[in-house]
Image (cartoon, rainbow, N blue to C red; front, side, top):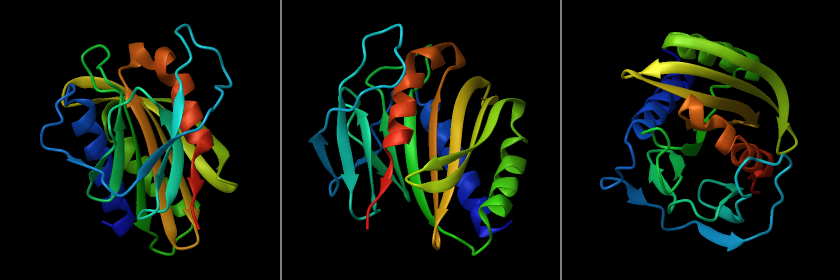
Length: 198
């Protein structure tokens, strides 16, 4: 298995593990270096619930910043990923987002993307919702939204990948499918606010 495939598989395992954790975070280590600052961010699409206030999460050690809902739990570090979770579960599953930075193997975005898609499509009851070419932090990126079953629970996830020089960035957003409409606007704000720090 290629190093990128291992990283992708690890991140998907983290996603499944944290999504199915149902709010249990007793063994997670809080991030200590990053800072949180208040920054007003408007959400582009209205949601059926109140629009949350956002704060800017900035992590200079990993090298990114992103707006996150101010009501979400304290971010945690897990291996090379920063995980963000909502304060409560939805339909019994964790609502989460994560950012991971991995050294690129030198292959193209398309090659990494195809390898990732192959791994994701192996999930039980995988169902593609959309696949798009997008721009994140002024860099060409790939985005995949799908549902799949992991450990007998169904999740919906948006998985995004971009390469900046020799760095592969992976961002994902996940919750129970019946909660997606509630969190989609927040997920979009988080993704659209992602910035790579110099």
